[in-house]
Length: 637
Image 1 (cartoon, one colour):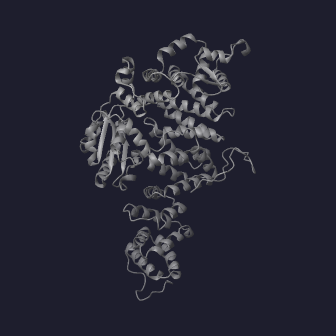
Image 2 (image 1 turned 180 degrees about the horizontal axis):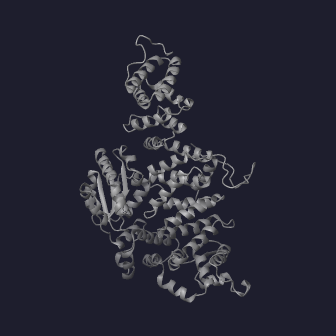
Image 3 (image 1 turned 90 degrees about the horizontal axis):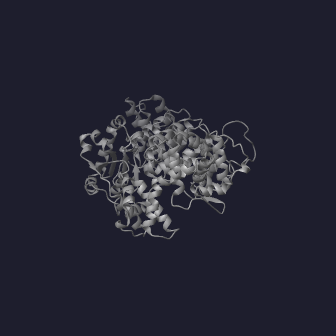
């Protein structure tokens, strides 16, 4: 399905005007407008689906940790459990085991145990590559998922798929004996080797002896994600600056440290609250226009209740001079810092130094990016920096609060910030589980703001369907029940698009079968005769869905699909088995099905034989003698 183009933005008013409270979104085209904005984002939010090209890129930069060779042998049997410390690169190692060189085209599916691994158990096939990360679970929750994990492991071994489970060292003792035998403890690869391997893949040659002792100590204490950032900063600077690679590496190491010594001296030299507020503004909005930074400073001072100066603003030093004393540069009226990673590092340190002001700082940036004068890149820069700190602080509640405030704004550029934040948060190692749960609770609310619902739709469609497909489908299914037609129609459209993939179609059928109220339009797509394959997992779910459909007295909602199935029953006798099983021993369901099938048979060539076959199956389901005289073939009874 192609997204509509050239539609009117919701901010543009034509025709009727909504003067009351709440959303007035009349059709699903507004979702496609927003989705187009997400797709056209020049700096897309991480994390996007990991492609074969990404895996090849990662393989060139992967430094195998101690124990990896053993893990390569263990995974050949289908299941491996990797244990290690936080920040040791366990998940990257798992990806390399699941898709080694030459097998990058296999998409890795992240299984969400909290959503019930049973959703995937019957649908594991040879060639599947599954990843489960349990490392953040407490003992009580971990034990609650034991049975599902064991069942998933058994299904993987039987099907010839592969499964990698990531746990912490402490969790090794919590496993059952059969899974404990699959554990491979991974050590931490040498930090310098990791960075140099990254650099070599980018064409930058640096020998180990070129790394000074102080930098090596910092790198050895850093998490793998920080090592990757060091390499990224060195590569980025090599495109912009001259100088030795060792010097750029030393500067990148200082950046991930947050320039601790220099920041201490900077704060000592600038004890005036206004100057520190300007430092906050210059680092949070680095890359923005001078006007934006100046307004942000005054907004922050007002928000935290800083006393008004006795002197008039015109009697104070100008903002350009004050920025210069902070080490900032103003080029083409844009504020920046010439040093590698300096703005992000300083803002991160300030965030930690003023931990008691987190709520005020959060509100300051969240509110400032909403103001109309900001340009799109300024919103993105500041919004992403706030997201960096919230995720680094593992503050899931603030992530949710900020995302909701942005998602309900009328300006689509601000709602894009909510998408960017949630797209990162739902796959974050520390807050991802809680944020995914929040998306579920939001999706459950039929009166949820339509704007927020559209953001959730985009996160599900663009991110979670690739990383956590079962989680995405459950939330999309809930949104089809939303009270606003624009939301329910858009959610249904997303699921219909996903149903083009046979695997996802089966997963959607599971979600549909679990709800009390059948979505006839969606079911008609999923159960169209040409879509229903002979996969053994389909039968039970189809019976459950048909049972819900036949319970609906509005026969016109489901009779076309029954007729389509009957028309194919000559070559698909299993269709009749499913319909009869759905009718079961319920007389009302059986009667409705009987009438629809009888009326169809009167008009269809060969319909009498199909009707008779269905009638016999219903008889057996009812457990009674035949209702019709065998010698009579007319269909009027």
